Length: 310
Image (cartoon, rainbow, N blue to C red; front, side, top):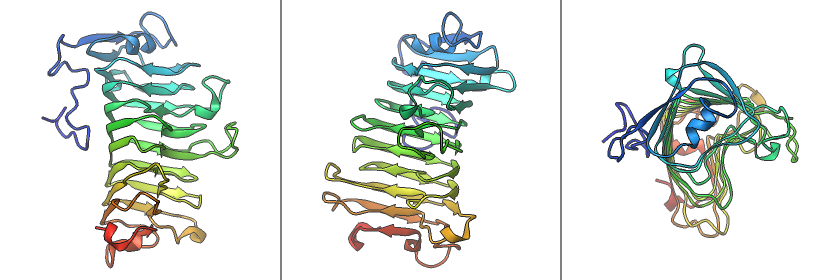
């Protein structure tokens, strides 16, 4: 049963904080101020346990110099309940580390202010340890590390990003590796069943996704202005990866810089343990396949064998 009408992707049937199929029933938790902590704050609300629906009686910017971690399952952050102009999370990284999480209508602006959270791990959102997560109608800007990450040795599974915007990660935000205007990273082989539906990524060096050993589907997404060599969707397996499953359906990639117009939509490298990997591509438009005619595989640069391409 869908979590709500129109829910899509691998996490379409999460129970989140609604109380559906859960005991006890969900509790309504009100955010009544924009403080970084304390009674009535968002931090206090996400720290609670049990099924909960977090609603907002205020709007504006919540600036926080610590990670905002969701450690307990069944949490629904209903940003749509905030008065205009809504809720912005600034400086912090949201870290769902539990199951059954639903996040909607939140603006994430990580920024480069201060020294905490550490800049080398300052994403807008990090999914280490998360499962059954639905993120809808959110926007992600100005990260120092990646806009979204799931790092080495950390599993995440059954995730949907639905109608989200990823844009303008900071090129010179203070990362120790230098220029780091990167998008989305799944950096281990324990990350499975990820959906991106009707999402947009724009104005970044690369990584509208970089992934290893994952199961990902991208449906009706748009990428614009990727300036790096790896491009939009870069699959880079290594010796620890057993399989890649990647679907790319109805996506559109636009490169305004003529010198970079040889960019494929998907770059999939072969690896030592990827003989059972599969890639499905349909209806993709990109610089190497500017119209929806001809071979679908004009949109793909791959080290895979022909038998791996379906």
